Amino acid sequence: MLEQIDENPDIPVKAVQEQFQRQFAIGISRMKAYRAKKLAKKHVEGDYVEQYALLREYANELIQQNPGTTVKIEVEAGPDPGNNTRQFRRIYVCLAALKQGFKALGRDFLGLDGAFMKGPFPGQILTAVGVDSNNGIYPVAYAIVESENKDSWMWFLELLGADLDIGSNSNFTFISDRQKGILPAITRLFPCAEHRYCLRHIHENMKVSFKGDLYKEMLWKCAAATTIPEFTLAMDELKAFNKKAHLWLSKIPPLHWTRAHFSGRAVSDILLNNMCEVYNGKIVEGRDKPIISSLEYIREYLMRRIVTVLNVIENSEGLLTPKATEMFDKIKQDATHYHVQWNGGDHYQVSGKPNSARVVNLAARTCSCRGWEVTGMPCRHAVAALWEKAATGGRVGALESWVHPVYTMDRWKLVYSFKVNPINGRTLWAKIQLPTTIVPPKHHTQVGRPKKLRKRSAIELEELTQSGRLSKKQTKAACTKCKNTGHNSRICKGQAEAGTSATAGKSGKRAKVMKPGKGGN
Image 1 (cartoon, rainbow, N blue to C red):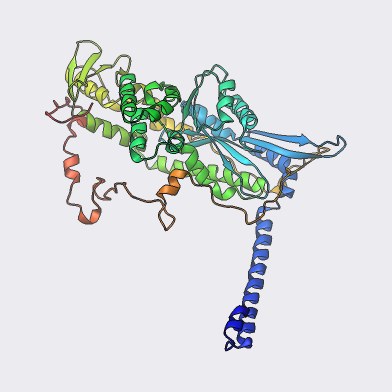
Image 2: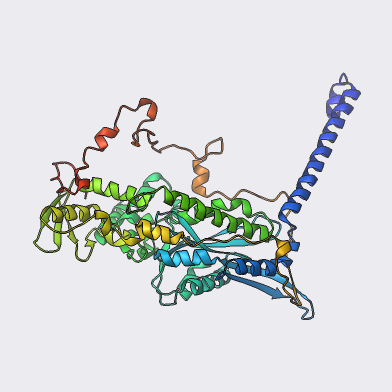
């Protein structure tokens, strides 16, 4: 402003002084508002430093109100052995209700991930999240550690294995990104486990050298293949397109990322670690709070979530969960396009497109497409075979009875019958008499305003629009009336009628013979 006066002496000095005073007053008011907000936040959430000293009392209260809960606190002693303070390092929590619910679920499948804390002290939240009967998230355990490394993952997984009875020879299934700390930790603790790599992270690494949607489509085609021949064919297509890309992808063992090599132990064909991403999004507002407030934010969310799911259960009907019913209805609709031949025993030959016949063994509950084996849900070939068996006088019963029990309403209700109990305020916590006090970990405050938003991946940055939102380019919107893609409700002309014509198989009738030029593989 003073430079403008020098250049233009016609500007009155009094106007400049008034403008400066207004800006100064605005700055003072903002500073007062910031201080008031900081004091209010401290009063509501508690002080960041003081809450570390209350961790033992909090853990004791949590265990008292939720018997069977596991809480482990790890501290570090300073160089002076006579010092009565211990520096916080880690805390692990596995609530009894979630532990019991996961064991009742019977789905040996967990996603593992870490997320940064956003308060003044460093740390990361490690989480283990399962998939429930409705294919929704089911958090099991969480921990706040110093950083995401091999040592912290070893500590977390050892405690998790003890809580869930996962032995070193267990055939459990994990899914995670390829973080350097988690890979050796799982290999060392659970050498017999099936470890899947999140396909999104593989694609992010692949995109550094091989850009374009065609590479993504080929990667997904390889990963989605359910049989070894289909996987080999998809890899050969990638090799013909780009030998370097094929060589890069071949270095990742297919056991970790393609359905053709998955076993059926997890009762899931999931390729993405979306369950952890969803969970981290739910607790993001609790990651910048003091440590006890952060842990309480997570516990209260888990308590509310169980109530929310129970309300959905009360309004649901049928043998299967709502999501499983939706998936199975789609399978039954696809099964109407297949032709079935019976061998007089338990084997059926199911044909769709030319040279795409599949063999179904109803006694073993398997299909050569491996869809039934991997997901636990009869594939379209198996459903067509079941209709053929019913049409020839065999005893089939309800088709839903052939689905794995993990998808049933009874199993879903059992999982959420275990409740997370509330706890008292800190004024009612029992005092823990110990000679040492827990203090926060060391931390050097960084210059500048603390970052709140997470770092976006390279894929997300490319897809962002100028408004900061993800682009909808190359996505197909679904009509809210008929649920089909390619148009919206404003111009809908009843296209849903065409998609519901082939439903005869749902009533138990014999599968239709596929018309020439239609069907699937």
